[in-house]
Length: 265
Image 1 (spheres, rainbow, N blue to C red):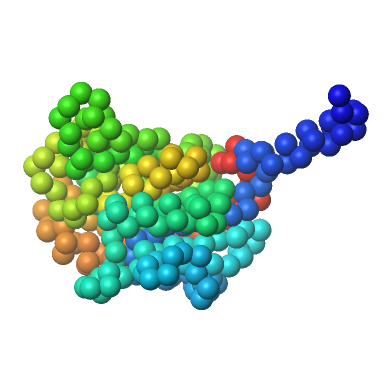
Image 2: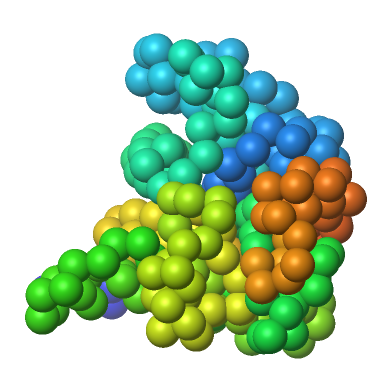
């Protein structure tokens, strides 16, 4: 049996290494679009990583630096090599999340971005939501149990103190790989009881759950899905203004996180 002082020392090391009780030190922020990412890069005074931790040849971009007591990395999936547009959608989101967790070992993942909102659920342009649950709405597998796997419902990491302090809205997030909403998608979104919809969240949640990293989802409403304007037009019309609101919200979230441990969120 180890001497009492060694036992005590070992216990202290275990307590100090407990992620629930030590201050959060490393955050990875996953953002799908460059337009959404760059204002935050400037706010946190981050620099592009010129010696990337990712495989050679992938378009993924990491901006990193220190803000207050936090090591922050903003990960943008980059542009499609063939078409030159942002690499949006679930495939890019899951890949960069997986690679980021392996390379950076974050204490917390923040998936930030714009989202469509449903006015019937109380969403308005510019609203900031913290997702309570995330699920897919376009993975339809009509076989018992496989249907549940397709939906992939997962809870976001609970942050009651953050919600109370910042007075953010809460809603369920539904994810699919299409910007528009088909009749089948609409039925699935209603089944998910979603207030907001995006193209990345549930994919990030899947990887975070797989690798056991807490994840939260900060979404700003850029278009009203059940409104009378075409989704694409409304999204582009509101993108810059809504991104400014998103960036302010993410800054407030990060300021709240600084100096706190997971159990205090």
